[in-house]
Amino acid sequence: MNDGDGSWKPEALPPPSKPIYYRIVGQQKEFTHDIDVKKAHFGRERTSKPEEEEDVPCYPLGQEKKLSRKHIQIEYSEQHSSWRITCLGKNGITLTLLHDKKEDGNFKIKLLSKGESYNLKGLTPIRTSTGSVKFWFQPAIPKDG
Image 1 (spheres, one colour):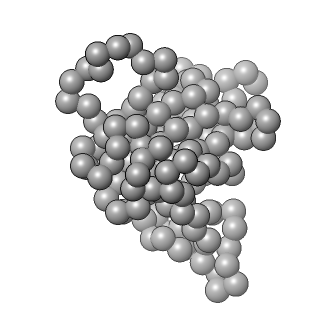
Image 2: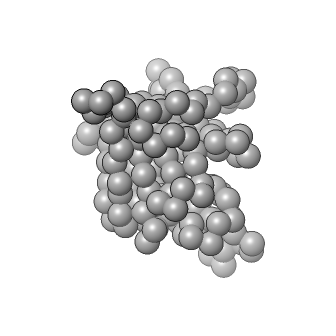
């Protein structure tokens, strides 16, 4: 994924087998998560099951140690009528804003530190602050219509 020009794009994937809200697709297609809930967490792959059942599903993004077990939250915001990403991990995330270009023609980037949020505006490349985990947020046709 090139930080400023958005040149890396996910390959076309087959349509989902069920209605979904969005997809999370790894840069090398090492993972694809079809998300059918309005709130989900994403983070480091667990080596064991959590002791208690979690209210919010958590999807793995890899085994990188700088990736928190719950590094990102994506939730539909009724208030903003959009998907909202929140950084939960101490190492942060970087978004490439494909809808917003700088004067030099490159796409703007948005850095999120722990606790910061941003309203996603369509297809969005995302990476951890270390750049070791790269993936895409791909909105789908709403489940409800």
